[in-house]
Amino acid sequence: MTASVLYDAPGPKTRRLSKVVSIVGLLAIGSALTWLLATLAAPREIQPGLMQPGLFDSSRWNIFYEPFQGYSPFQVWFGILTGLAATFSAAIVAAVLAMSLGLVVCLLRLTKNAGVRVPTAVMLEFIRGMPILLMMLFILLVSRISVFWVVVASLALYNGAVIGEAIRSGIQSLPRGQREAGLALGLSSIQVRLIIELPQALRQMMPTIIAQLVVLLKDTSLAYIIGYEDLLKKITHLSNFYGDRYFFSVFFVALVAYLLVNLSISRFAWHLSKHVR
Image (cartoon, rainbow, N blue to C red; front, side, top):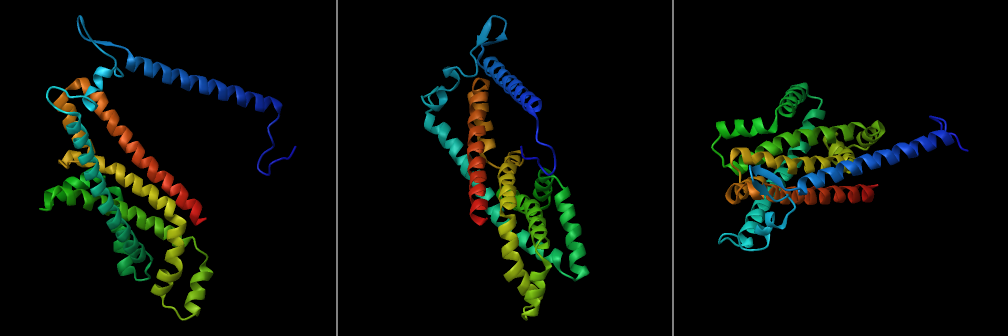
């Protein structure tokens, strides 16, 4: 039996106990999920003598595949898809601006000029400490730009600050000898940053950056509070229009849409990280 450097290999009793704990944990999780699904599927009494079918009953999902009170399923799916397109539009523009802003603030934070470095650090801490929703409301009140650009500006500012700090950490983690070698070859300080250090830092921190872009995409859901017609806003309109009977159905569709998009981006980040390594 090979012993680990950090701890002794578990013996037969420990391995048996670990298996028992794992089985009990899986049974507990399975029981909880079974109870949850059974509770959601069970009919419920909304008024004395008036029963409403369970959340998985087909009558709660018919707006997605058959006409309902003169409205076609196309109108439902069109509303969902237009909301998803609005979400993507704000997320993509904000992601591009956040990456650009992150590169700029990273270089400003690494400069030797204290008159530039210190105000930049203070500004970044202020932006990172402000909730995104509060930032959206503040920009909406003090500016005359459209709601779309309010959402984009808020997401770009906050995530740009986070991405800039991530890139700076990647640069600072590089061996100091690379910078010294670049300077010895006659490159200027900014050339060393851009040609030698920045490409390596971006490659090293790319999984972290993509994870932050996933957060950016999810944060677009806050925009419905200020009236932006994103996916969550469209889903809210649908639930209000069709009534409480379809509340669970339409929000479940939104949940699946967000999960599919975010899991796809996370999978892309995994493949990118593997390729980079």
